[in-house]
Image 1 (cartoon, each protein chain N blue to C red):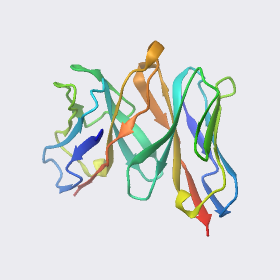
Image 2: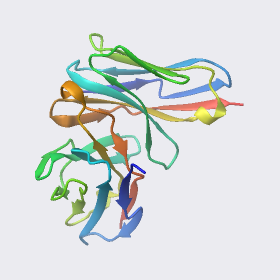
Image 3: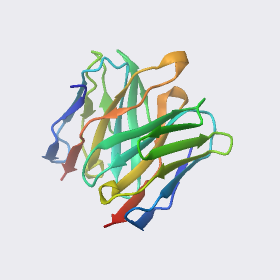
Image 4: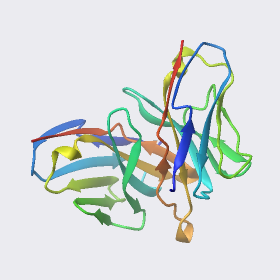
Length: 116
Length: 111
């Protein structure tokens, strides 16, 4: 089954304790993104990757790191989490269509992170 | 800077009614526009994708249109059902693979 998976689905941690949220897709997609969703602010893009070893900042990259060492994986790293990073996080993947267009984005199930 | 607005923020309709959700964006230089559905506490389900060169897309009871020149898209839902109750999000994708989401329209279909 074609899918985007995220782990863990739920995480409660404390300020300053490094954590990684994993994202994996089995569709051989070139493009992957991380988003956070907050009440009243909607979904905002954190980082995206256009292929292996190619990443760039979205609208809210502060406090986050990413890496893309393999095509299927795009982990989100919080080196020193703070309470304002409490949020619902989504990973997405996408492939390029014909003529330079982009096909639809597929989203993972989400990771609910609470930083105390 | 691209901004995406969805109107109305919330909508309540009786079952069977046809309805239109609106999405507007400020910069017409987009690659595509995608409509999603999100149930409470759940992930996003893709409904329709419209490429910048297209005017509309249809899937079942759903029809999405795109007018790039005016910066508008509409999602038409025919014969609404209680199971259509959810939040509907639109997202535009522009240069550099950046994606901007609207705040969503919360739809409630009464049985």
